Amino acid sequence: MNLTSILSENRNYWTGRAEGYSKVNQEELSTDQHRKWQECIRDRISAQFPGRAPSRIRVLEVGTGPGFFAILLSEMGYDVTAIDLTPAMLDEARKNAGDAAERIRFLEMNAEELSFADSAFDVVISRNLTWNLPHPGKAYAEWSRVLKDGGLLLNFDANWYSYLFDEEAQAAYEADRIHSADLGIADQNVGENFDVMEEIARRIPLSGIRRPAWDLNVLSGLGMTPFGDEQIWQQVWSENEKVNFSSTPMFLVHAAK
Image 1 (cartoon, rainbow, N blue to C red):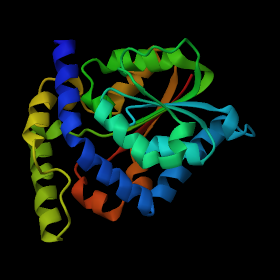
Image 2: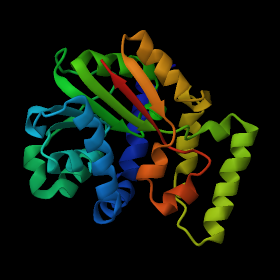
Image 3: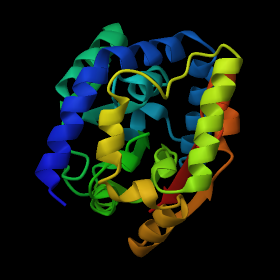
Image 4: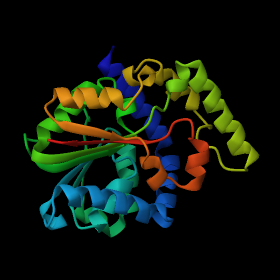
């Protein structure tokens, strides 16, 4: 697999999606999703670091996109660094963060090749990124490397493009499209250039692998203690998301180092 080619294609695709994806994040920030996600994240970090002030917890967000998680984390008082491969996404993140952008370190960086020192962070967090990586195992190794002993990894993701490889998943995916249309819900899985991402998804490894079992196996091999929460979507998704993506429910990979 050509790493340079996939990364370049990803950067080009998400550059084109930056403005539209930013609007999705803006909606999340202005609705009850804001509270739901903050509670979800705070509960897990607090459980890992009981009694420690957020300002003393260094958090790395990998694949920040338009900045949703970085903004939430900063609001809660954590020491936040947020990286993304795509400069256009980082531009949107800074705009969405407003005054908080001064408190967040936004950096352009490859999730699979971090420039940070070993044991630099207490928490690594990500959402909807690993499915899109050409070498996700390499990314997990890097995320583990920059975590301190006793650190926490939180990765929210889904089997987004499994329908390209599985007939039952394809039927369920198509049913989601019909159900969304019947209910008059804007379908987030259709639109301009989605065929481009489908073509990329056909060539990246995780599209055809059932997760989170794969993730748990990889993280165990890295010496971490992982578990999966396959019902996390019930806690954090909006009602519209539950309709749009019922065939690809979000899971959480939670791992302690």
